[in-house]
Image (spheres, rainbow, N blue to C red):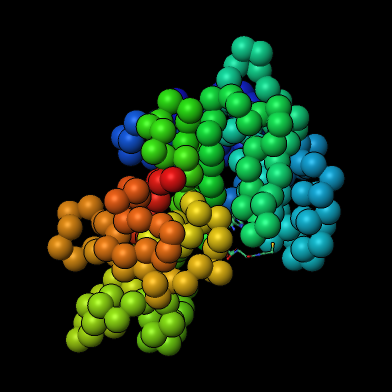
Length: 251
Ligand SMILES: CC(C)(COP(=O)(O)OP(=O)(O)OC[C@H]1O[C@@H](n2cnc3c(N)ncnc32)[C@H](O)[C@@H]1OP(=O)(O)O)[C@@H](O)C(=O)NCCC(=O)NCCS
């Protein structure tokens, strides 16, 4: 299903588009956060008071609009995917966040068709992953991460901090651009995994070891305790240049 012309998104909005990724019980969506003013105005009414307050604290209008767009696109998509009979309004959705800030659906939306979701944004791009109740029981959590190759970062310093020794070794001798690209591939896997788990940056990124060199699909060689590599499914996502994105599914 593409949301073009579909409720709850009106024609003035640019709705989320489904990524062509076939994984049982999972859907992945991208959307632009550069939305028409009229959409932003309309979407304010969908937000909970704390979401509206969070947006109001952002002084630059363009950034404030992006904060509104993230939450509205998430609400609209989740409301639609939760089911149409009866239709659920995006404004009626309730969220809770755990101790590390990971958002979850709150009651009465916890036992429905959606088991878990996660999102990531970079610049004007939003990525949302949804894990449905029909997915294998071994997948209780989904994590997604999206990064832009255009953002400048001190790869050498970051690699030292967040990559394990083996991963660092694979960066040696690479040309600047290829090193940046390879580093970001490791980075999005680590972040997607840490976001599925929910601990974010507080998890030791250098205690993770991902194989993107020899395996046709990425896989974990080592993960911080108590996580086991065999419990996790990982995949890079096709968002097109200049983005690098990954998905993690596991317990
Ligand atoms: C999760 C985290 C890695 C995301 O960092 P990022 O690269 O800047 O952001 P991304 O664009 O990939 O993802 C942001 C989205 O992830 C979600 N998110 C926030 N915290 C999360 C967490 N711990 N786990 C999974 N997802 C999280 C949110 O929906 C957020 O979007 P929103 O704030 O617009 O709603 C980072 O915020 C982090 O480490 N958080 C944990 C911090 C912590 O422990 N806080 C404790 C006090 S709240």
